[in-house]
Length: 495
Image (cartoon, rainbow, N blue to C red; front, top):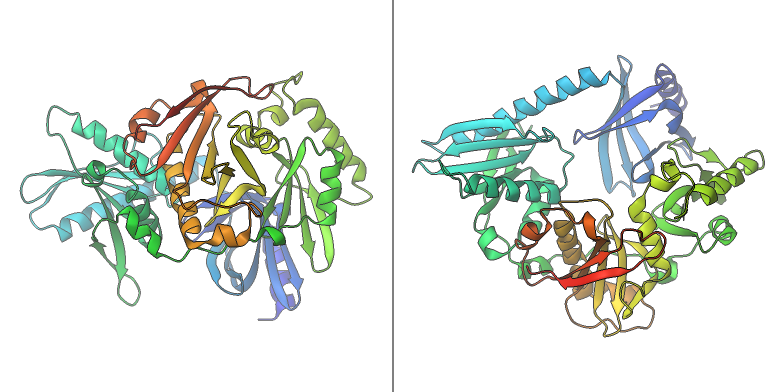
């Protein structure tokens, strides 16, 4: 394709609307304004850039198709190792979009139910519905050839995390088991290839009694055009099976260096501003709230600033606005803010708590040593709040919450798996993330910390479904942690 002509056509299509939905091939969508989408011609390639909840994303456009005010793109990055098909669609009204989404999800739920019956002779459907809470799950109950009732759960939204799926399945099964009439004691979790792999690993971290009640099965597409489907069952994994895979590479501590621009910004208020390293630069945070981003483009350092998706480039013309933003953060992003309803006080509270502990971990546990750079430690695409080392050499994952979160226990369990894989593979030692300190050849420990009233009401029940091989501690914090962090109670989680 002629790149200049293609870029002109893409730009013309985008200019026709002020708001777009970026729709991934998984079905996940993200709303963007036209000014938040960048298409540029760089070194003989069309480059797409946009800012989403994960930060600034950069892709190379391999091909595109413009039709009926819509853009279809095939994009790649990491030298072609990552590829995806995405669409830009003019944003419809919420009501129209919601009705279409619900109908599509219900249709998918019925397709999955029909597949179950087709693959299980003499079985009979009892119920097919979307879950009442958010309509993201297909809830199916069927009766097998022996008149035994079995439940099946499937994500029909393509946006739900494995931890959410497993949590929903366990709580629904507990509800079905408690019924006096026609109780259900077994549940299937049905998922397509990628989520199936992640769910299977998470399932391995359950207690044996819960493993026996929950079956994770793959919906596999067959045929040249993947037009037919079948349900594939494999044996349950044990925790020991998880250590056979190759751990992903992690960044060496010696490679983690701040850009000059980021260093200068941190120096403006080092007791309040910290940074998080990402693939394409650094995110600067004021008590955990991202307010600027530094990135090297070619040989030039660029800084964007602002707390909204529409960020501005820092230059001589915008310098005054940048310092006005800092002054506003100083005024409202503090424990004694005069306006605690201000967005700068309310936003990113977990990151605020993490930034406090990042500077001084001793109030949580005086035996901990934090890695000098690995706050928001990346493990296979996920970010762990804090990774520390106890004085006895044992690794500690610290997961923080300031609002009730049902999935907290399973997030922590999955982080434990990923860090254990790195520890057992020797990657953490090789990367020298704790300098010359020795990492003990003992399993990682998990600390879960939250204000006392913030632990979810289902926490104790769900924690009892996790394997006792994972050593977990609960830290109850004071409610006014922004002013003066204190640990009110420490207890070993009885899993």
